[in-house]
Length: 586
Image (tube, rainbow, N blue to C red):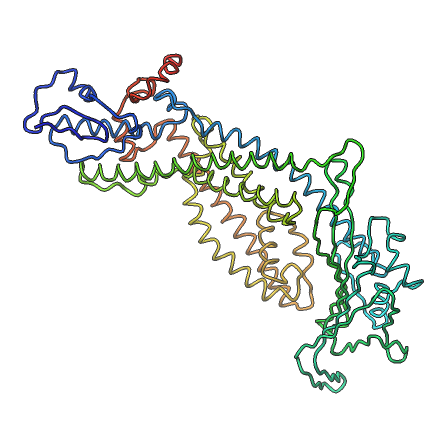
């Protein structure tokens, strides 16, 4: 009785009852008994049933070893073995160039948009905030009631003429600014004040009567109306502020502008809608009202435009290029996803084979070798690039203005694409040292950082609660964490010590013990141990490269296959068409 279906698509003439005498040549090469292999079974997902003869078992083991060895080959070795073209490598190289060009184009456009928005916001502060001066911390405040009234009046009514400020902004601004029009009429300015429902405060008697419910009072100032704000004595009764109850005052209006600098880059100028909000913040009731100006921007395509000369609208060329980027990433995504699926299938096949023939389970570390992390990283980068390219096309079509989201997607994807190049450098032993060091040291470093994080968080909470009232770098947990991380790297040490207020000698003494202990512990001990872990791993990898790496059961099983990639024993029948390339390689 003959056994036929040993492997998928493989017909083998072997006796199941008693093994027939085999020639020495056939026993040395079990593949000599293979008579037919289907061309569609290139990947050889075979059913490793219980072998009935020693020759059949040797053949299955040899076939599994060769299949595993082919799976872990690099693209060049796979080309020598079966003539398989390195399509993934070609697509990755092409994708690096395309994604980088796309990022540069978007970065230049985004840079102009960001610069235009920031410079316009600064211009609005000088136009609508009385006496504004550029400051490093950008904190602008007033301290008297008359100053508050003057600021609001200045923003709404220019001291000389209301019409000059509101209707003829283009005559006083050096930019392309104008108020939003609704038909033939200019849009109104909204003025809102937020205050407690009831508040009777008597600081001299240490008494107060307050209802913390917040009420809102809003009205609109039309361009053709005169507006006055002030106290009862001044008889300007349009709006009166009760500073004992007042929380905030907000002035909101809209402006338009056109960004002309894009013409120099052969792009159509964009039209910007600025929604300006001037906020008078009295939440603290500390005698200091902070004034801030915020602007929300929406970008759209201008309704009626004409650009003379050679400058033409070339948005459609950029969108066609983005379409090619999406197609390239889709091809890369499908090829890498297919490789991940094949790796998972081969993993399950090897686990079943090992359990059937050796009565052993494959270790988790050996199973993880079938999961190629580089392919997963490329899949993630392809997905980010596709989503970012779609957003970029929508931004260019003026349908969206999500520049920040698009920048994060395209920036992260480009970073991952360039990191993916390291995978192909790791095929060379001289360039593989960095990858192996990071791979081996990462689990140790993560465990070490988890322990260090407990100490770091303890210092963060302690510094926030104790030193926060006396030092500006300890006012919030986020600022404390940034300050301590800077101290670990040796930055700004003297300023951290010197800016500590000396109002309380006990707190000042505590701050010295706190800072000295933190710096000594983290710089001289923890940071040194962290570097020692990396250095020790580096030395271990260098020694392994000289003396040989410790082999796992998977690698030991594969090492018994001594066939070289260009030996021709990895080829299938459907590989004859490309055998000329292997011969040329030889």
